Image 1: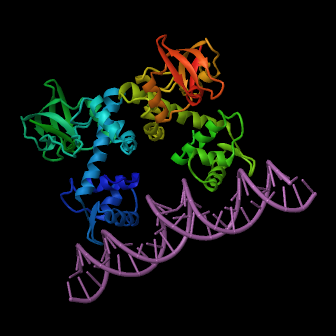
Image 2: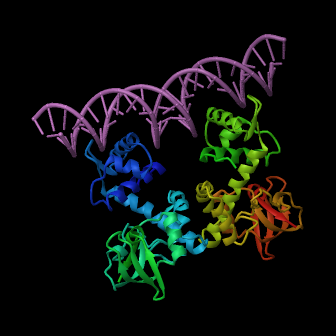
Length: 220
Length: 220
DNA sequence: AAATAAAATTAGATGAATCTAAAAATTTTA
DNA sequence: TAAAATTTTTAGATTCATCTAATTTTATTT
C-alpha cells in the first residue's frame, strides 16, 4: 500500500463514496461540493491522484476510482468505522458525536494498531450507524436495506442503518426513539408530503417526515 | 487554547523537553538535532512560535518556552502518554512499540476524546515508561528517581521509570528481565567502565553497562 | 584583541495544498 | 446548429514547512 497524505486520503474517500463504491464516474464539481473546496483545487488533486494511478482521470470527463485507489479508500473507511465503534462502545460517545473525531483518527498510519483495535473490539462487522466495516482485504457484506419511505403499509422491519451521520438528524432519532435494532411497522403513509405514521417496538406511535423516512434503513 | 499545527506542537514539545520543563534556554542546534531537521528550519519555526507568544525568542540568544507554550506542550504530552497507556493496557502492545504510534495520536484534536480516554483508562498517573501524565491543567507529580548508576553498593530500589523510550533499549531490558516495579539491589560497581552487577527481584544476578545503568531510574 | 571556529540567521527555492480570476471545453437551449 | 450557460481547467498567488547556500553574529583561541 502506497503512503498517502491526509488530503489524498480524503479525496479518495470522497471519490469512492460519490461513485457508489466505484460504480460510476464522478464530476469535479461533485467532489468540490462534498469536500467543501473549490473545483480548481479538485482538478489539481485529481491530476496528482491520477499520476499515482489511484484514479482514472481524463480532463473534462470526470474520474473513476482505480482498483488500487479503491483498496486505499477501503482501508481508510475501515479505520474510520473501527474508530467509531471504539468511541461508542468503549468511550461511551453517542452516535452523533463520533464522525468528526473518526475523521481525524482514520489517518493514523499503523497497520498493527488497526489489527489490534479490531481484535480489541471483537471484529465488529458494522459501525454505530449500521455501515459495514471492510476487512483487511477491503471485503464486507452489506445488509439488505430499504428506506422506511419505501416500505408498504403494514410491513414490519428492523432498523439496520441510517443513510447519513448528520448529528442533528441522529439527535432527532434519539429524541423520537429510533435506534439501530428498533422494530418498525408502517401504519399509514401520507401521499401528499411523503410523511408517515409508524409503530416502533410495538408500542410507540410516531409521525415522521419524508426526510426522516428516506434516511432510516430497515431490513425485514 | 490556541489551535496549533502538528509541526508547531512537535517543536513546542522539543523545546519543553530540551529545556527541562522550561528551566533553561534551548539552542537552535539542540532543537534541530532533537527533531532531525536543519537549523534554518528551526530558526523559521521559532520566529513563528514567538509571534504566537508560545516561546520567548531573541535572535542568536536561544529560546525559552512561555507559560502558554508550556501549557500547550503539556497538553500534547498528556495526550501522548494517555495514548501510550491505552496501547499497552488495552491493545496489548509492548512498551517498546508505543512511542511512534503515540507520536501520531497525540495530535488528534478533541478535548472530550481525551477526557473520555482518561476515564476509560482509570485516570492513570504514569505512562508505560514511568513518565508522569499531566492532568487537564498540566499538573503532575514526578516520582523521586535516581539513575541506577548513582545508587550505592548494597542499596536497594524499585524501578520506576526509564530515561529513554528507544525500542532497542527497551527490548534489551525485556530480555534481561528489568521492568517497571522490579526490585533492584546493587551488588558491585566497576570504576573503570561504570558497569555494575545488580540483583533483580532477589533472584536474578545481572551485569549491566554504564549506558543501561544511567537510563534505568529507581526510587527507594 | 585579532583571527579563527562555531552557531544562528537570512535569502532564495521547492513542494504541498489551497485560493481567485481568466480561459477553455462541454453541455444545454433556443 | 449557433449562442448561451455551465463545468472544468489553467495561470498565477499564497501559506506552511522544509531545504541549501551564503551571510552575520557570537564564542573560542592563540
